[in-house]
Image 1: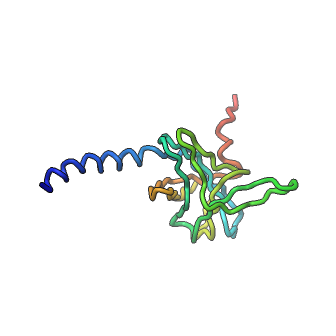
Image 2: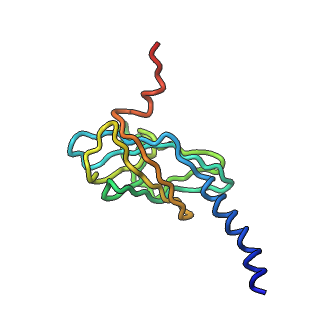
Image 3: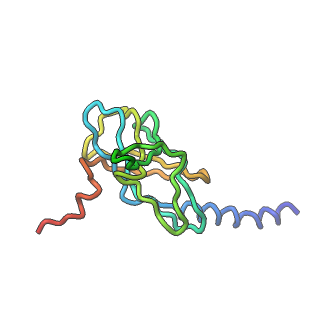
Amino acid sequence: MPRLLSLFLLPFILSTASAQTATVSIEDPWVREGPPGMAMLAGFMIVHNEGKEARSITAAEGPDYDHVELHRSIMKDGMARMIPQKSIPIPPGGSVALKPGDYHLMLMQPKRRLVAGDTTQITLILDDGTKLSVNAPVKKGDGGMMHHHHHE
């Protein structure tokens, strides 16, 4: 009776696969333009987790970089320090903001000069093996905040 078994398993496999991809999504990704010759760039985004289980970002990669590291900036004794992270938690039903002064991606050894207006691909790898790829625009300064100010 192996045929019955596969018919029974197939819908289960399909439903888990589609449920997984839909639970975590990326909003408003951007990369801060660095000065010429900068050996690292910072990447920011908001990661939403609509699932019922906690997820975490355990790694990231991008074709334009030698490697990508997860970091968090913390203030210690009035100094901003970057602490490498093994993972960045995304609470269930919540989101985590990768933003200046907090969690962010360090995009190490860019293979090409990235300037405002370029886009660069970044892939997040989650603890369950899911890969999420986005094309992030490169912006100057604190780019994420710029478009919230409207001039009359």
